[in-house]
Length: 299
Image (tube, rainbow, N blue to C red; front, side, top):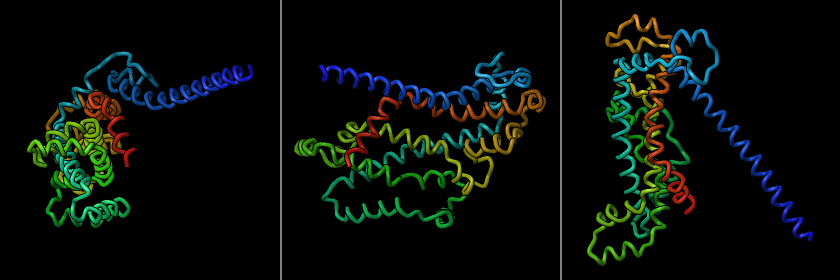
């Protein structure tokens, strides 16, 4: 009888704990979602309603004018092309080189493997700092080039180690069977290992895409021509410095600039910059948790 009462009490405490945890997570989610909805609502608001109204989570009158204004500016289009180039070139290069290097380091028969791994770990513990990085980019003649934003981020130590751990856990019998069937190392890697690593590769593709799309500080240091700035630097000009005239570089009608409230233009710019990553996430979400956990737990 006592055991029955104890079990019932334990289940009751567990329900209370789950309820409190759920409530806390809902509150945490609420604090994250509300600011985003607020920015979205303002971006679709009419200027007169925005000036007369206060806090809003739903616009009174929908207006696409700010989006039309932002997307028609030459400054935005230049920044969008820069971010698109950096992301589309950087992500495949980063995933390709990182996975090949990680697969190589996963082989215990590789000559100098421990020495290479120690060098990789050394870069995690000791960063060269800002000035050596700048001097290196300068010596490579990459200043004011988009490659100065792509090449330094191609291979990350953490990414490399997680990928290596993942490849080490794959059954060696698969490779042995493939070699018996006449496959060489490249065939095994591209036709067997990579298809088995879809979840892990999808997770790191998302990481790399977000990192390249959000490139900001490197662009501030290395890119000297405003027309080559990526979207994040362009957004910083709009939001922090309130430089809405960046949109009118190519002769956009200035009367529109006077009609649209600058705050609405800023919120619209934030939404336009964020939208591509938000659109990408649902396609990779199903691989996200699985890929990262598999690679990190098996050390």
